[in-house]
Image (spheres, rainbow, N blue to C red):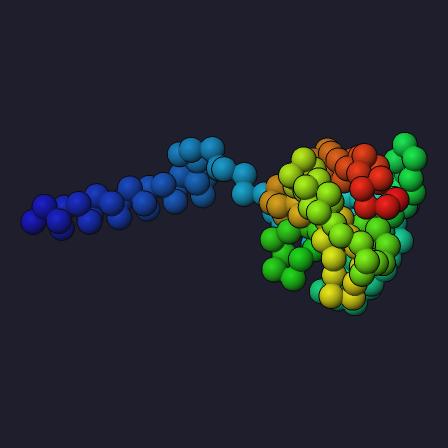
Length: 163
């Protein structure tokens, strides 16, 4: 009997809550879920920050953009793309072709101090720097902060990676 009363009370409460929300009233303020950026909204946000955007790849689902930035001493072309899962915005910088004679122990140690910026070598033997930005509730201020950090990290580690 108690279970049946609990079920009726729960259903009544749920129905009441739905009716109240339907009238413009909410029992609690909604948590902002933060929509994920799409390739188009990412491009618009980058342009809104005042950057001139170059399209590297316009294929739907593989869109990639580039912005030519400058650090204190370097030109730093930063690429922007949404991951295939749409969970991340990847900021990447091509640092040059990896030389097979170069050991990168010092650069790997830099990963500790630059994180979440990190350095890696691609399957095509390119030396890269990157930062993955969580694609939830991204706003222009947060994106600019990530871009600025990436560019600053590239600049301060230039002697280590050969810039």
